[in-house]
Length: 383
Image (cartoon, rainbow, N blue to C red; front, side, top):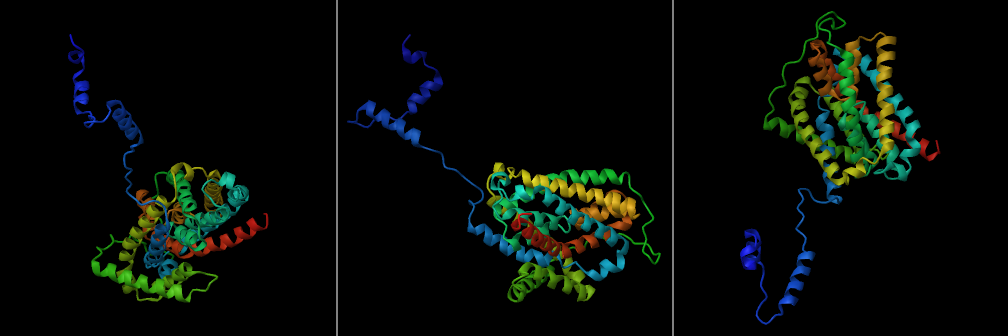
């Protein structure tokens, strides 16, 4: 049998479609040229997002300038102090626990946070800034992390590393809090005047008019803040103060009209911010090469839970449900505090949990900036 008859059908097909040398060209030279071209050929790389660059910083500065006032339209301090006096005490304990945990954690990790050989994705000045931003997040929420990190000029890779590390510990924190809550308690949470606190009705539907009104107000606040902000404070903290002042002093009907739209559009803007921060932050291996952040957050979360449970619940006599909802409002914000209250049957704590979570959004940025000032002195003084 001839060699061609013994060939595999697939091999014969490849041979049939192989390129042939043009007339007058040496076959062996043509084969070598074709082979070298094949070796040099690389398939085109396709990416969904553009590579890291200045365009991400422009996107981030825009969305955080809008998200800050949008998410604070519900921060009516009148409601917080009128309806949630007991839970405000639990929230205050949780905030103090976070601050103590941040200081202890920074004492344990500050030398690593400022060491480029150990800090991984962190630059030489990123360590104390990310530490302060993470403390702000554990008092208010993601809004405060973004505001503090942006105000301090945290690099994209360091911002992404902080998000990743905090999410790892959040995956541990929330199940621990749910386990401490047990099966839940169903009644016994009342106002100081004796009337029952009821859970709020479902949020109303948001229409285009509400979203446009909320966006217009956010643009006004952001523009005014950038023009009148003191250099020592910055535009985002100034916008925070202006929005909280508006939400507290404006007629409640106005705040009730704008707040649902602000939450919807503001959260969407935060998603854009976190997506751009992740895209600009470098590779996953670089983001996870920050053991100093994991040490810092481990100490912060451990101190927070220990102080809330033993000092707040056991020592000060704060009810278990209130202590845990106050802690959850600090670490996770209004949404997770309300979710925990609903899941455990603490219906009377759903609305107060949302209100103190808004209080955390109102004060978290300022607390983070205050910690950053202390951490900066500590770092540069050789602490």
